Every structure is written in structure tokens, then in C-alpha cells.
Length: 181
Image (cartoon, rainbow, N blue to C red; front, side):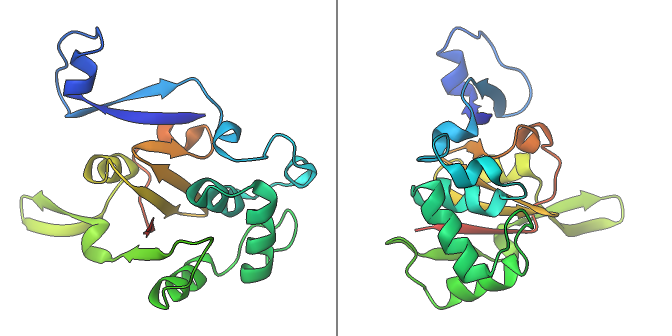
């Protein structure tokens, strides 16, 4: 499923009346992640794959077919079928620091200051990693490849493209994120 974060102003203008509380409210868009990935439904490879969140993230972030993204991740990350993607963060940071051309675009790593929030406690303030919800509020526009513990997904203009639970688990901590530019 895909989800979009709407601002209060967008919601008020859409027959929801007054919104109380947070600046953003999560509403489900009735579409599946496969509709965001070109060729996903027709791909023989996709039908036999599991643990392919990085492949789906590349396909949706760079707007390429599932099969093209699968070939890229297999080659660049040495990914084995149905085994997930090892060394994801290291290789992504390397591609980002070298401005590697990826399907006509590049990655820009969001450093610690961009994926962390200052949290205030009784004893003072500390920096903490953002949650998915905080990230969506801070970055409502743009395309981002996001890594949480053991999983990756895409955020495109406030829409979370990934597994059904990716937006439902809004307190998942963002470990790393890259902007597609």
C-alpha cells in the first residue's frame, strides 16, 4: 500500500472539517506499491522474489522497471535471489560520495544533522534519530531512499512506497536516508 501525508490546509479544504493536533495527518491512498513500480505486476522475476525491498526501493525512487532495478542491485550489491541486500549502507554511501550516475540521477546522503532531531528531556536535550513520521514532516517534498533496521523503502513527495506496514509503523527509527537528485 502507499500512503500520503497531508497538511492541515490540504485536509481542511477536502471536507474533513477542523484538524486538531499534529500538523500532518496520515491518510491511506487506495493503491498498492506495485502500481508505483513499472513492470512489477508483469515481472516473472518479481513473482519469484522475496526480501527484495532494496530492489523495489530503487525501482520506485528512480522510476525504472522492476527488472532493471533487480539487475542493477544484483550487479552493484552482489545480491543473491531471495536473500536480501548485504552492505546496503556502505555501497549507498560510496555511490553518494562519488556522485555515481544512477539511471541519470545521483544520490545525496542526508547526514546525521538531517536525519536526527533534538529531543528535550528534564536533564537537557539530546540528538535522536528521526522516526518515519518525523522524517515525513521534515521532508514533505522530494524523493528519498530510506533505511530502517533490516529494511528499505522509498518516500516520494510524502508518499511512502513499500510494504503495507511501512507507514503504519511511524515510530520506526530512520537509520540512513539518501535523496535522489
